[in-house]
Structure formats: C-alpha cells, structure tokens
Length: 293
Image (cartoon, rainbow, N blue to C red):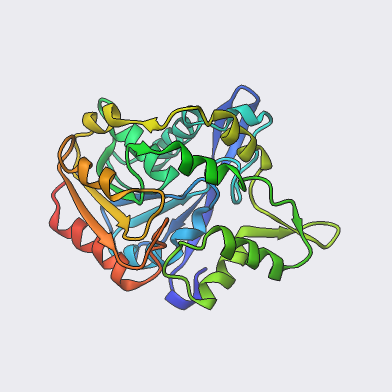
C-alpha cells in the first residue's frame, strides 16, 4: 500500500516460460477508484522495478486500471535459470502472457527506457493490443556508448553493509533521475534491496541480467527505426531535457516518420524522468484525455 496517496494495490503473478522452465512474473494491480474501463500497463527500465511507478500509478488509477509488472529477474519476479534468457524475446513473451491474464482487448502502454522498447516492439506487431503508447526517455535509436555506460555497473553491485550504502549506490548511478526528494530516495532504497541471511543487503535484481546485457552489447548502435515505422497507434514521447541517453536529435527525428507522435521535453530531467510529481504525470493524463485511441 502506498500510504501517502491513500491508494491500494494488490500483488499477483503470471507464469512465463523459458527454456529453463516456468517462472513467476509478479505484478502490481492498482485498485481503480471507479468502474474504470481503460487499462494501462506500466513497465520499468532495465535495472529497476514496478515500484518506480508508485506515484504515477496512484494518480492515474483514479480513472483507469493500472498494472505494473516486475520484469523477470527484477523486483519480486523470479530469476531465470540461464542468464542467456534475459532478452527481448523473453520479455515480450512474458508481457504477452500478462496481457492475456488481464482479459481486455486493448491497453495503453507506459514504458520507461527498457519498458518503452518492449512497448515499441509489441505496438509494431500486427493485431497489437496496444492502442496508445507512452515512451519515457527512449526511442528507436540508442548509441552504443550509452549502452556501454550502463554495462559498466549493471549487475555488479554485490552486497552492501547497510542501506546507507545502497542509497549512495543508487544516487550515483541514477544521478539523472528527476524529480527525487529525500523521501523518494528512501522509498527507492526500500523497494530496491533486500536483507540477506548474513544481515547485509543486495539489490532485487539477478546479476545475470548484467551478464546478459554486456554479452549483447555489439560493436554497433541499436537501430529500431523499422520497428518505429511499423507502429500505427498514437504515441506520446517524453524526453528528459538533460538526458544523456535519449538525444534530442533522435526525439526530433521520431516526429518526421512513423506514427502520429507528440513530443514533450521535461525540464531538469535526465535519464530518466521519474514521474514522481504532478507536473510530469499531468502531461501523461492530459495527453490521454485529449488523444483518441
């Protein structure tokens, strides 16, 4: 329960399937405050978890059903037996199982970074269930150098002596996150780590995610422009004005080709806007209210 917003969620799970067997994919379902007909799925970034959307989900659940999964290997979801399985084929397969569980013909999709890539792939497919797509600081082109920077730390944190060290780690690696108050950092620490039987702390992420990530960094940039061109639903592009990951050049190019897209730059944010204040969530809510599915 997110006490500050007086809004509740429940935890449930679906079972995905990999070559190593079945695995649990945990998700949070926020209780809509009315008989909402619309469903929105919110998917986090590569090293994060479903709690990144707590503020936005509490706000948006006033008018719609909100579903926030932990992608396999993160948060409360299971870890894969083989780290080679941490790829977009698996992620999209798991999300398809989740969408089947939700039992609705169409959903809106809000994806931060990796969650946006999953959304772009699914939205580009024939007969996609995604009717509106919101991309949080991600586009169809990613420079290899940006991926290499993530590869330097992902999955290599080891164990921490206390939560103060966890906080220092998070603040160092997510220095571009905005907005983040002291309370926000405290909540991120709470939801990002767990205590070991030896009394130390470790992140709620399989180190194998980092191994797979580094193995898949090629000598080339990531180019998904063909995927972008195949998307037909309306798209809201959110870009952190100070983002070092999602360039303005890429964002502007997205407006010249592909789907009908709207670009909003969020001041003071880098990679990524955290959607933890009313100003940022207002952009999403206003767009949803003004955009026909």
